[in-house]
Length: 440
Ligand code: GDP
Ligand code: MG
Image (cartoon, rainbow, N blue to C red; front, side, top):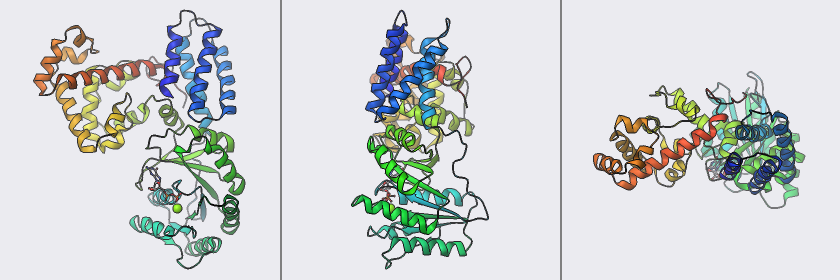
């Protein structure tokens, strides 16, 4: 999706005259790309009209069209998933907050329940988990295991088959014990949907949740809309947790779910581990959807670690990325770990390449890349890499000096080039000095 949208935008900048037909061609291309990423038709058409209006309104002589369009696309997509609230669910201390989870089987409810419990426990809340999934054999054991590992008190039954009763009893027990957050996990069996929704209504009536959260698998695509609408009707959830965003799914379907139910995404699941829960950031989500890499996340992470920053991030936001910047970033990445998580944020195919091999192999490859850059001269490092194309013998020298191969050196050069290209194309979007700036 990102590649298509970015290349469509790039085509505009190649056109000599950016007239009405170029713009409408671009909008068509962007809309097709969105449709293919499982964004709903009606939504895309609304987006198209809004984009057109924005572009027309801001189209004044002297305005950089390419930047204007890029920013408009990014902003409009962010707007679709942004509820403009800093925190969607605000549990109160010294009160009972009942949270009910709904969603289809396999969506990630039980996993996310524990994640959320840990999230709030770390923030000083007294949290309990209730297993109201009496349908799936082993459901209680799974919750029990997760809860025990994370030291979260839990409630469930091996003998009671009525999920409404278990939910009610569990919530009552924890209420008496003055728990502040009580999370109710439910079943999500595929079989007999009407029955499932009826069960959700009944559990909802029994435990009277302060908040209901729907868990949605990011990879379900177009089905997201119908599914979330059905759950909205039966359990009127007020927030969404989007899971499995660590995989290949970019979550285009989630945009439709948000729009169809007018309900915000509160958290995203980024792995099977209990700590793989992040608060949802519209800008990061859309960046990933558009394939511009999670530069913002990477920047924040780097900044938080007090690493060797030099001027590389400043350069990047100004649209430049030299080999030296690459060297600095690689060095930082080596310090940061765990690699698998971080590399997924890297743009330019680097993340994908690395997610295909293990952490150990990734680390080995990164080290070799660092050796390569360590073997370059200051002049080479300060350059944008063209110097190697002009004088190819430099490549051979660096390969020998670093004990690597010509192919590996070429790969480093290629990746730096991709990053540089990315820097120049996201320049206006990153809000750095000289950029157009982003709200928020
Ligand atoms: P439930 O049926 O809705 O309760 O789903 P589960 O919590 O049992 O999760 C189903 C599967 O998805 C399990 O194997 C989980 O480990 C996995 N899972 C849940 N959330 C995530 C996530 O954010 N990322 C990944 N990679 N896997 C997840
Ligand atoms: Mg479950």
